[in-house]
Amino acid sequence: MPELPEVETTRIGIAPHVLGETVKDVIIRDGRLRWPVPKQIRKKLAGAAICKLSRRGKYLLFHTESGCMILHLGMSGSLRILTSDVSPEKHDHVDIIFDSGSRLRFRDPRRFGCILWTEDDPLQHDLLSHLGPEPLSEDLDGDYLFQKSRKRTQSIKTFIMDSRTVVGVGNIYANETLFAAGIHPKRQAGRITKARYGKLAVCIKDVLKKALAKGGTTLRDFVNGEGEPGYFRMDLQVYGRAGGPCFMCKSPIKVQRLGQRSTFYCPVCQT
Image 1 (cartoon, one colour):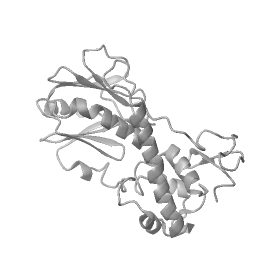
Image 2 (cartoon, rainbow, N blue to C red):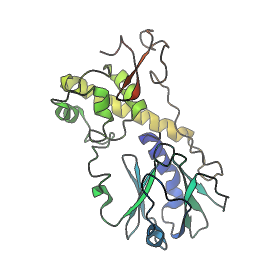
Image 3 (spheres, rainbow, N blue to C red):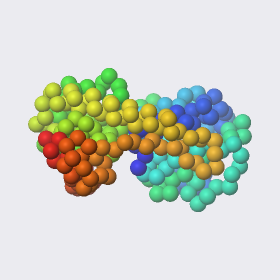
């Protein structure tokens, strides 16, 4: 599933090709995504210019003077810029065609993504209004996590993966962040000290910054027929390394199911 760094990488990659562009038409080949693509979006976008492209959590926000298109990549979605009318494939559901002749194509094989429209403040939309702070913002720090975690009996891993706590810490980043902070993923969120939360907040930022940096250096040209955005390649410390040696202490990396997700950790370095 695309996580926050991949979504931000996508935003950075397509921004030069959509900002200031005027929409000529919208082609909806199959609007059966997580929620049906609103039919009026074609009328709403036609003739409108994309004046801003922002991100909130994993949602991309395409702002126009009359409203905002909210887009989520879901579990398998991707966006690509095409400079010509490349024949669509089976899972290419929506094209946004610009006056310049280029088009933004949304592909989603598993259909868990969404394209919605709002004329109100998008940050107050039902899908976004409950979201916690952005992980790279000043709003996320140890004090915030400590106060938010009080009386919480859930595991620290599920706590930081909850988008109401903080956005963008998906399964890969939760595993990597907890390893960097030396915290066992099953430890109760409400029983972790303020000092350890201070370190955890720093590690969340560091891991995501490194992932973004990798995405930036491996980003391919979005103007291509393959639609491959060159997602980051992280130097994973624990995720996907069950049985392999811990890079710190050489103990075998363990894996368990926690919150229906595979959880990787070092039983020695994480307490």
